[in-house]
Image (cartoon, rainbow, N blue to C red; front, side, top):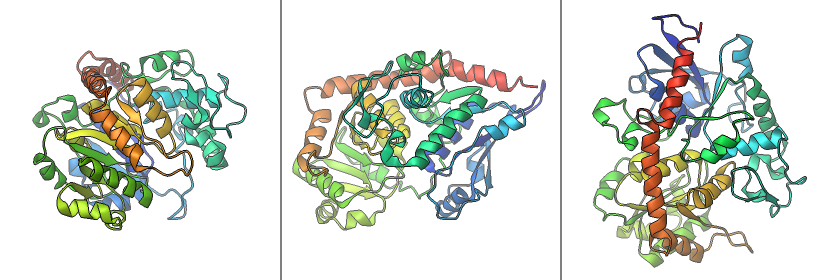
Amino acid sequence: MATSVGQETHVLLVALPVQGHLNPMLKFAKLLSRPNLRFTLATTEQARDLLSAANTADEEHLSPVDLAFFPDGLPKDTQEPMILSSCVAAAYNIPCALLWIQACGAYSVYYRYYMKTNTFPEDLEDLNQTVDLPALPLLEVRDLPSFMLPSSGSNFNNLMLDFVDCLKNVKWVLVNSFYELESEIIDSMSDLKPIIPIGSLVSPFLLGADEDKTLDEKNLDLWRSDGDCMKWLDTQARSSVVYISFGSLLKWSENQVKSIATAMRNRGDSFLWVIRPKEIAQNVDILHEMVQEGQGVVIEWGPQERILSHVAISCFVTHCGWNSTMETVVTGVPVVAYPSWIDQPLDARLLVDGFGIGVRMRNDAVDGELKVAEVERCIEAVTEGLSAEDMRRRARELKQAARSALAPGGSSAQNLDAFIGYITSCV
């Protein structure tokens, strides 16, 4: 970035070629949009192919962001982890910022573990051991980000070591969160490597903005979104539909689908369910029957922000990815937290024990499978249980706090203004 008075500042944004990284970066650019700022969002050629297939890379809808693609040098179908290093920018004396798209809590855990600032169990093999860290609930090893655990293998551990090493070249750590949501965690990092919340990185309409006066809500979706589900939601009663989605990466098991479908049938709940690939749903007879009978709708991908903000939604059964977590916080929807890997177990702890807007759904302790009774227990708890009203009240409070954070003078708005002020004054 280089500029002088009256000159345009060019900001290069680099993201991994996965949906959960591309869309927060795109929303970040739109949030920063000013007449004297120009953005290029760069990712690998793998993403270009997927975006083209889904018809979501039309650049006229991405203004003010230009797209650029580069080869990653890896075999086409490789699954090896990759880190895009800040050292490249440092070599050319270009100021570098990190956009952290997980919770401030996850950043704190990673930093304290790899920088050895706090005590962790010597051996992370025993998942029942406890971990006591500043500003976080008392954790068990199973709650830690899975990349830290021996079961993830050395590649992911090395990835995180490289990441922490790169922080020395980073001037700002900007986070998709807001101060009022994770204030104690943010304060606890102030003397280590400070984090600057600039979220929530969601479409402006979720924050109460006039859609006619804001940039469009286009996302960089890697799959075609089924918008017809919104017409179905319009026909449903208020707070009557259970929304179920495990994000863009996780695949459903047949047991999970059968157990959740059976619970929906037993309770009589209407549902909107995202299942990828959609063929899994077609192989589960009870689910196929309920869809045929009109009890619910199954889609392969959908406009999640629109879905969560619809008045028909009663709760969200979620994998607890951070993008989904922020969207449910901003829309004020209680959750059934069913995490799997990476940062999701920690996000689930935050949603349930930190934010107070959900319950945790767990697999059976004996055979490791999800049971129908457990699904029923959790849906009942967030919709009609003794604590359901408290969860809804807390969800409404956080929804308002999210809006206030990005309103003029709000905590995130002030942080963004300070960041923009710096990058437009660099010489």
